Amino acid sequence: MLTLALLLLLAHACHSASALRLPYFSSLKLWRDRHRSEARQEALLSEVLSPLSAWHPERLAGSTGQALDSSSQASPRSRSSAGALSAPSLRDPAVETVFSADAAQRLPRLASGPSLPLAPWAGRPQDARAAASSSEEAAQAARQHTQHHQADPSTTSSTSTGVSGLGAADPPPPQLDPAEAMAAGRLASIAYCGRTDLLEAWNCSRCAGVPGFTPHRVVHDAVWDLVAYAGYYAPWRAIVLVFRGTDSSNWGQWAENMRAWRTDHMYPEPGFPHAMVHAGFYTLWTGSSLQTTFSAAVSELVAAHPGSRLVGIGHSMGGALAQLAAIESKLAHNGTHTTVYTFGAPRVGNLAYQQLFNSFIDVSWRFTHNRDVVPSVPLQLMGFQHVAREVWEVDVDDPSAAGGVERKLLLCDGSGEDPSCHNSACYLGLCTSVADHLVYLGVHMYQDSDEC
Image (tube, rainbow, N blue to C red; front, side, top):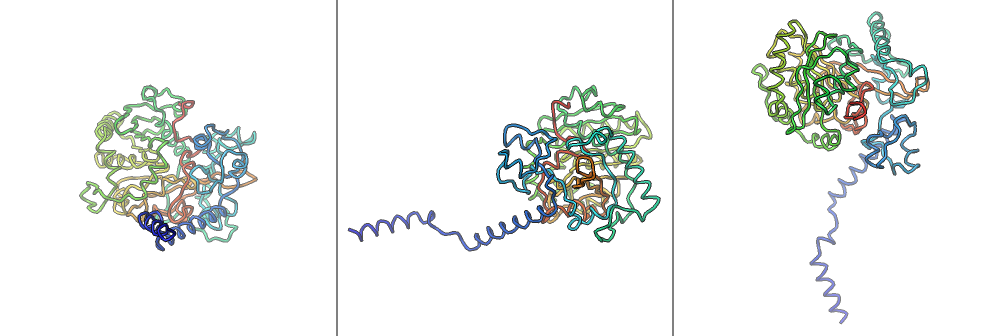
């Protein structure tokens, strides 16, 4: 009887072999390597991040159902111990980066510069003196800082760590106008205001921060979930095209999907037969109503404002669309001086595309922020190459600064892929912070009904 029972048990085990099958050695090795990689990444982040690095209240609201006050100084560990989140990881997309004072040992651009100062971020605690400082005053200080460095090239950011000066080289960078960059950031933020009627009347709350702008076209393509607007900005004497990024609720998944993207569409410019871009970005531009509407809008604005320059602006996916729109507008109106400002933009095309972009665009500033996930995708190993010139916005732990955090812009080299800027903070080429993607130059890059 016992023998029969054993035979029945053996038969059942054979029938359920899949449930009893041990993992292959290769699977165990992949798991071990991934675990070690994550542990190394966590160790690196614990070395370069300050305890001031915090959970972004917008992301935290999704986990707890209740947003924290953005002025809270609680660290991830203290918030976890309070029950807000458990077992926090520095790789979590919700971590809002502040680099430690010692991070320059790993991230040499922090020490070598060149850099421009920024006012304390309004989302962090400020003393009374800092709170009284306006963004325009900060821009004036940054301009003076730039002029000082131009007058005396030997003066750069602190080099006390002994790291040799990296400089922003090949070719020398054009002068960055901090006030114009901040205005561009506000214009990008305004695109997230969902009510097109307020944009058309330039009557949204954020619109008040950019007086003098006259809207010409506002586009909301519901099929493709795209929002963009074009108009004339008198203080710049410029025709301005602004593109919104993707829905903020989809940023994490969108960035994750882009890691596997390839350059798979030839850009239709005969002089650059090897210029390739991702078909997804190109289809968003050509397959939606954007291309037709904005091509007509630019022609109308050029006729109405002869001699004006053209400025393309976009955040996130909108940065990719701003690049494509600026190139096409430049090709159609070759005599128009063209500038592009992007904030947290992904890679759009390959090296030949970068060369095409550089050939037609007169001035380009590509802003990155701390460990923003989006500029690290799609991957370089998939054939993508960023356009220049990068400006890396960083927040660094500094007890002597207002709120304990020093904010500054680091000017990167002309390669588009400066290994000492944003790329240096991305372990194995990948950054992870969605929270850093939500704010640029102290401006919210997402929809907020209270601000729109």
